[in-house]
Image (cartoon, rainbow, N blue to C red):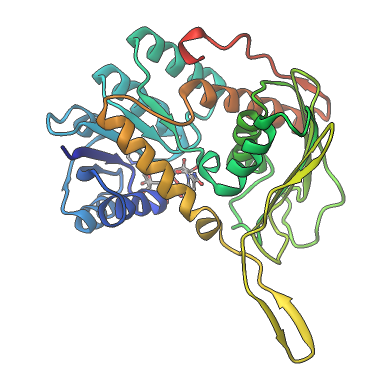
Length: 334
Ligand SMILES: NC(=O)c1ccc[n+]([C@@H]2O[C@H](COP(=O)([O-])OP(=O)(O)OC[C@H]3O[C@@H](n4cnc5c(N)ncnc54)[C@H](O)[C@@H]3O)[C@@H](O)[C@H]2O)c1
C-alpha cells in the first residue's frame, strides 16, 4: 500500500522533499499540498500531480491523506504538528520542531497524551554515513568514554537577513541534535564566545562564534560556527575519548595534480553534503509512517534541541554560562 502524503509549506526544502518522494524514494505519493503562497503551492502540485488545499488543516484532515510533511517556516511548525497529532496522523516536521522550547514541550505533552509516537523531526545528520560511523565506534566501547568534542560548522556565506541568533537557531541546531544522539546525553550548560569578527560580515551578525556546551557527565563540546568563511561548506567533528580520537571523514573528492599543484575540492553546498542523509531519513519516515508511527529524532529530541538552542541564544545576550535543564526523559520516549 502506498502512503498518501500531504505537504504543508512548499518552499525550497518542501519542493525538494516532494521531488525526492515522487522520483527517488519508494512507497509514498504526495496527494495534497498547501502554502500561504498559492503560486508556490501550484508549482509544487505540478511536480507530483497533487491537488492544492487552502490551509494546513485542510491537508491534515483530508480523508485521503495518511501522513503529513511540515516544511513551512519555523514559527508555523507547532500549530501544524499539533493538528496532525490531534488527527492521529504521522508527521515529519522539518527542523526546528518549534521555535521555542515551550512550544516543543506542548508537542511532547500532546503526543504523550495521544499515547502514540507520531512525530519525526528532520534532523537528518543522524542518517549521515560519517556520523553513523562515529556512533558505531563510540558505541563499541573500545575507545573508552568521550571527553571532548571539537566541531566546526562553516558556510561559504549567508544572505543579509541572517543575524547573530540564527547562528544558533538555523545552524547550530544540527550539532545540538546530532551530538546529543552521538553521546546519548542531555545538555547541562551553554556558553557563547565571540572572537574577532570577520570584516566580511554585517552589523547584525557576529561571525564567527564559538559555542560551548557541556553534557550531564561533563563532556565539553566546542563548536565553531563561521557562516562567512568563504572557502566551502565545512562540517567537522572530532570526538576525543579516553583511548582514541575519532574524526568524521570529509566527503570524498578526487585529488588533482595539475600546473605544479596538488589539489582536492571542498564541498560548498549543504544540500549536496547531506543529500544521501535526506534520502535515507525520508525513506525511514515513509516506512515508519506506513506502519502508523515515526522513526528517527522524536518530539522529545526536538524539545531538547529547543532547550539547548534557547540557552545558547540567551548566552549570546548575557555573555554568561547558561544552564540547560530538561529533567528526566519521559519513559514514553525511552
Ligand atoms: N534539515 C535541513 O537541513 C533543512 C534545510 C533547509 C530548511 N530546513 C527547514 O525547513 C523549513 C523550510 O525551509 P525552506 O528553506 O524551505 O524555507 P522557504 O522560505 O523556502 O519555504 C517555506 C515555505 O513555507 C510557506 N509557509 C510559511 N508559513 C506557512 C503556513 N502557515 N502554512 C503554509 N505554508 C507556509 C512559505 O510561503 C514558504 O513557501 C524551515 O523550518 C527550515 O529551517 C531544514
